[in-house]
Image (tube, rainbow, N blue to C red):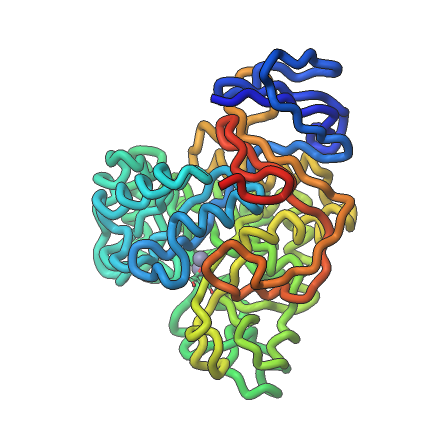
Length: 430
Ligand SMILES: NC(=O)N[C@@H](CC(=O)O)C(=O)O
Ligand SMILES: [Zn+2]
Ligand SMILES: [Zn+2]
């Protein structure tokens, strides 16, 4: 185990302090810490120290689509983005709907060693929406699954959704819903509105998201379990979740970096890099999700990193796959959309991108304050520099970033997973 002394970092963007890391833990925090013999020093003057980021919604594509991403490449992208833990979505091939598959993904993550991988289990067998998967066996497996989702598809059947919420209640699990009413979104290609009419693309109306969120909040209130809403994207969704929380109803929600920054008009290019589920929405929606994240209605930012190979994106809009990459750009987009606009402080960013996602996903080793005794999961970030997004510079296997060509603030300088640097001087260490 290597020890490191990080000097002069701004802890959560506030006070300046040194961090001494040894044996995988933070062993001292303070000013002017002495450097023990043989300890590497990292000059962090001007850098912000945050707890390692936690992504509750990542697509790693293994098993089945190793041409798009693997656990190895996806967790390298995670480390590069400042993440020390990612929750891997279940829409793999085979689907992560058994103890065997979730254990395989968990083990691949552990062997790669770039970020802890917490597999998400499918809610239904094959994500087909007809029969509950073996939720208990996945929970009891070595992967200790606590989050379940049919993401990519909605658990549309209300009776099945109710049973899933009831089932996971026994062990404190959470159902993460991809809120998309399938009948209202048949053939949907982009946000429904004046622009979808002009472009001749089938619309995906806000109500298709909002109707499911409202239904699930009521179902969950009836059951008394845990509901999490994936990639919330509309003003109406924010209003529904806000009203529910005011009434004391249990629900948590996430927003993606792309929904915090981008709008539907990008679809006018017919460039499928902007095609995503749920679709990019309007300026009004973007303002509402930013406000919702700022006031705590939306609990967390989750990337929904959805890598796709060139052949699934380099085609006509209607034939292209839904999804965008996001792990490497997430913190920069959040700085740009939320911190530089004074909607969030860096302490709030630690809350929305580390503490709370770890709490929702029950990843006890992550999302801990930078204090003595905590596992040394730390990111050092330079908010003062700018970078232009170049897809070919990505360490992901895929290139479908919607931020190509944009100049975004900030850079991850170092990431530590249990005291071991996965990133130093802005580059992967191995
Ligand atoms: N977000 C997307 O557009 N695509 C995701 C699935 C999903 O998150 O619904 C994918 O797996 O590619
Ligand atoms: Zn989804
Ligand atoms: Zn997803």
